[in-house]
Length: 505
Ligand SMILES: Cc1cc2nc3c(=O)[nH]c(=O)nc-3n(C[C@H](O)[C@H](O)[C@H](O)COP(=O)(O)OP(=O)(O)OC[C@H]3O[C@@H](n4cnc5c(N)ncnc54)[C@H](O)[C@@H]3O)c2cc1C
Image (tube, rainbow, N blue to C red):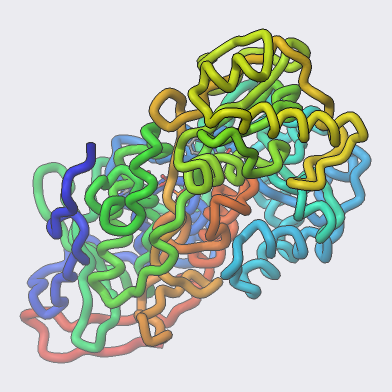
């Protein structure tokens, strides 16, 4: 059940006029809002660029959703790990793939910069103490479960991507068993302090402060029970996460995502950063898009299974990345999908799928699932006929996963009502590659930057997404935003009690 959208939770948060500020409680060159993956990367680069930088984090400790994540980062073009594992990758092939993975409206400049800078970005993160092991996991998985590193994290080997870019594994997981986001963020938080940025925790940023020329010059925060006015001489960088935890905002912009009951986020993903940016004149784009994940693999043997909808029909190649198959399960199959497997394929899934039925024949399975007469039988017989020849003319599944199904068969319940669909949002403030926030008219909101899930960054579609692109985007473009803000001329701002406004280069 979702509640109707309330304008209080979804409306732009209007900035405070700088003319109404009587006294600045803190003054810095660069103010970073949020200390997750994007915020830490922005702060490190701003501080290293010589700017007096502060990070304002609403929680007692930074980390955000990045800390609760698996920590996979998308790197390529010939990283040390790729080379050590024997994979030749190139910037050109990575660029071809990332353009597809970013989605139909991919921003060409962001794609180019991300790919050209990927090896350097890998070295930058490594130099912060983030270790990566020189190991490759060949089996299709959501992520390496031990401390291994490299794997095919997206659709690189799947139709239609495989024929459009030379495949290379580019998912890099830091060398920690299981989820590695906590380790990644430990390194980023430590590096923020070492770079000389000031970190203020338990500091909730509530609205921006804007001068009469439209320049963002600071933020109103709530800290230790009192409101404070924090001045930003060079810029404010919004890195406050996405909006998956704001149900009314999801209702307004991406209501179909409510069908996914497992929100991939932390309380900080309440959309406040996006709404503050909107209030200052920022334009939002891509707000209807999300990444949807229903993890029916591992085990990789499940890629040999057959996904069907309530009509007993296939609708996607089962060996595609989960972001693609899960989107199809939700949108094409209307959230009513089952994975049909036989004895040679079955195993516990990562998301703990239940069996909707186990039957000794295709006919009995069809009946048990309440599908139209003959529909599932025909689908499976046709699939089997071609699979025996390692062909899949309908959906082009790779031959490695084509094997006829032999009854008895089980139907794993992949419906939205009975299985776990994770989801996060991919829409946010329209930004240039530099992180500068744009107005609807294509102008820059002076003094305002955004990165990570607060921005509509590099990955724009769950259907094409590859694991690691979100943290890859947040850290890479967070760095660019930090550098851009630090390079801005320093400004003084008119106060309520002061007569003039002076600009200092
Ligand atoms: C279980 C899980 C696994 C995932 N695995 C991966 C993966 O392997 N690879 C990948 O690329 N992506 C993964 N993701 C997605 C990815 O983690 C996030 O999209 C990404 O880390 C977001 O980074 P960010 O810097 O934009 O936001 P965050 O890391 O969430 O940082 C935002 C910070 O801003 C703070 N904040 C929010 N509002 C305010 C405010 N008003 N004032 C002050 N501070 C504020 C928050 O507290 C938070 O610390 C995963 C997500 C989940 C939940």
